[in-house]
Amino acid sequence: MHSTTQTEEDISIEGMAEGIRTSRNFILFLSDGVLSRPYVQFEIRCALKLRKPFILIHEADERHHPCDFAKELDAAPTDLKSVLSSHESLAWRRRHFEQKSNPCKIRLDPAKANYKFSHH
View 1 (tube, one colour):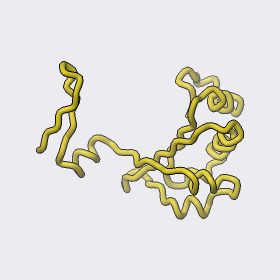
View 2 (cartoon, one colour):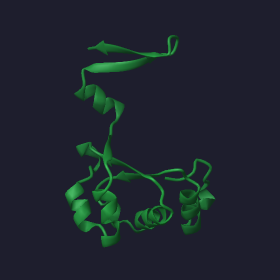
View 3 (cartoon, rainbow, N blue to C red):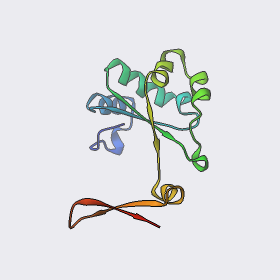
View 4 (cartoon, helix red, strand yellow):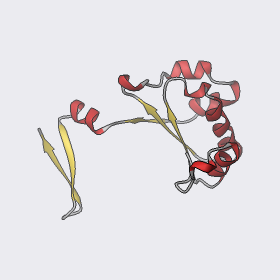
């Protein structure tokens, strides 16, 4: 969500707003209860006010408090409901999770700079 140059001293309301202001996009990571958190609500409202493009990524792994879209939409403040209802979301995937669920493994060959596929 924030600029990569943001330092620990900048973690304040002003610092969060500045990080959003100087960002090209607003990335919102959706997990259980995220829209009930006051600082997340503040950041979303800033991004909406600044008309930042939203990129939504949601937790999909049951082990890591996945986002329940219906529950989040129901619990979201009225002015933030449109964030969920008007944007697509990409599932966050971890390599280990993907390796277990997908027998086709992709690896980058740096010498040839292209993708190689292998089945295990």
